[in-house]
Length: 70
Image 1 (cartoon, rainbow, N blue to C red):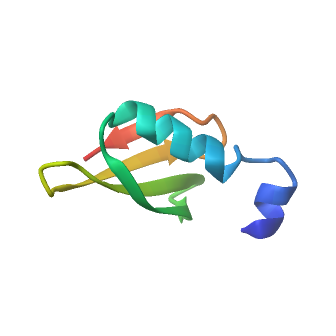
Image 2 (tube, rainbow, N blue to C red; image 1 turned 30 degrees about the vertical axis):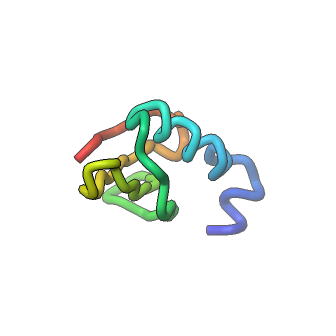
């Protein structure tokens, strides 16, 4: 995975976290992982909302766009 990030085939992890923070304003990012899903790479970002609930944001690692918020 480090090689993939270093080769610029995916957006930087900091950019993925930034996109996730915009998608879930007010939540604190707890963890970010680069994962292989089906036929693509995804950043799975876990954040804690102020009400104590966790939110998972999936970012397409190639485009940097939000894939889902759960």
